[in-house]
Image (tube, rainbow, N blue to C red; front, side, top):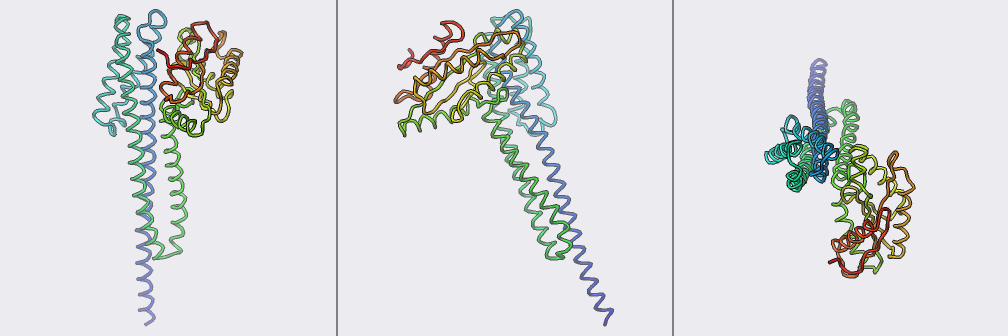
Length: 373
């Protein structure tokens, strides 16, 4: 009788241990799959981020097409480097998750960049093709950004599915033998929390990639569209003033030619940092394009904006933004007019900036209260 009881207890214990062992094996296999998926996600994200940055760089370089002499040579060298970087995106691991349209677009973009980098191509032909190259680069950047977003969604779904399996197995293990389950539950819980933190960081990174200029770490034009419309609606609703300043580096292209593109990039990054420190906490700084920035300043009227613009101009004039060179900025400033939308507002600021630069370097000019012709 005693032997029979021991046998039954032994059989039950063996069954419980077998269930626990099977659950533990499956859980650890799933945990390994999560780690493999996370590392694969990191690799694929790095590839796509490189593609987005390369396409953006190519879009900037297209603005320099048609130049001759040293400027033209620098543009050609930049095009060759970026074309090679884009070409590698068609290889593994990028080729495993990019669509056929995206791969074809990247191949076409790489070929076009190499064609534009040909030193035998006439300058007028380069300039004529610059808009086509810019549009192709912009389209490729958009496709890669879309692929990045899709990748994050699919990865989150895969990890969530694995998490569900883990919790089911954990419940089985706890029901079979609580003491043995404790040894599996704690490391699993740590892994789950780590994966959730990683997913949260991934979502935050993706959101920043969509709205942050990678060079200057300021907001980009896409973010300007979102924020600018909200600020205009808020100003209209509460009858509050809204001012803005469009800023441009005087002689930006000559600085780039003298400093090289890496030196020019450092100059822009330092200028963005200077502007960021000089504006209020409630103001927002955006990179428009090239050497241009835009500051949105809520609750500031035009006369106050004039003093604000002068403060920024003097700050840039007194700063050492490039070794051995005097770097100055010109600004067009103004206040939002009744019934004006964002595009019309920016158009007036651009006209004011053009007048400021026409009057000489390091100037501030107010925007006309009527739309430019």
